[in-house]
Image 1 (tube, rainbow, N blue to C red):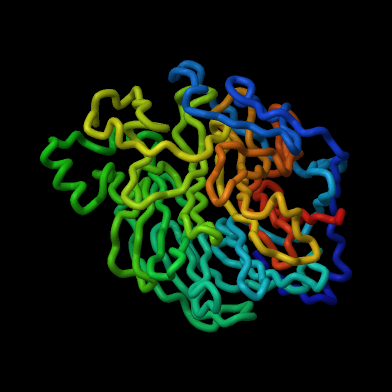
Image 2 (image 1 turned 120 degrees about the vertical axis):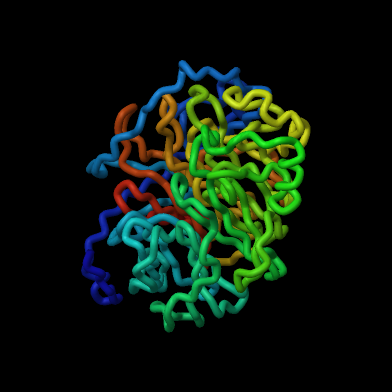
Length: 458
């Protein structure tokens, strides 16, 4: 694909069709719980709040499981996106090839991973933040790049990129729109296998001492990929691979792995997380979070995807358990030693929503488009959309409420409108990040567009 380098003058003459919608004032919605919270896309709208708990879930029902992949259509001429009252949403940029993770550098430049194209792009916002003033390819020739991280946080000297089976970094100084040097391989091999889930995200601990990398499983529930071990062999394995560490063809998978910033001193950080697509640090608390895709083929409402704080040395269930002591029925009796040791995630999403990137709204921000105080400190999560559910769900961005830095278990629809009908969608949200002016950017890889949500009513 030809890479275009855009200038402010060129962009000024470019027609960027916008879909702008502002919802009217609405009464506070009750919190949906129980079966009502499980819902589908027809009940989605800004302000709808759900609170799903493990006790709300049905028994596994493999016969109920269906393949219901969406058809991605062109954006309809009458497409409308919906956001809460006082907000507007408009197209930010569309000259992309499958935009995935988006992150903002300390100087305000927007870095975009284009996994399909094998590159990382940099977009420099114009003065009003409404669209880029310029856009350039920062790095190319990558293998399915996804995670992007700046290090050190305050004054980055490096841009780290997570490829499917390795981590590289590029020299960087504030304002660079092209890498000034070649990629340095920091981690040459994340796992012995690279099949299955391919997205690798990166986050640094608040003290900057450790780099964390998420590595998803290569399978649904490790079917046929992990031969049984004796209790003694398991104990020996877990001494170096952590509680619940997968083995065999899943070794090093379904986990978050810790390294030093130069890629040394590899250690397990947390295990049993089937596919931690969105790995991020909450800057207000230092807590590490994962937005996670759980397993499929157990029914319409199993197993919920989730957002959770990731605690070091904890085990989150995969493949033997889910959401606490709920045993995977296809592996019944395989690991009784892990019962009672499974950490229950903080926030459960509608099953098969496909939770991807997470961002945290700053607790202190003074930008022209800054969100109201009630949003500060909360998280936003992109839900890419279901395929293993008869009543379609996801295809939206949700707000996760935190109280004093701790998730309360609720989440609220924030940006909706990407679904056309039960068969077709025109957008699949992937990335979310906050710009320096306080607006929220959302990437979607259905029609390869980035959208900007701004608060305009002061």
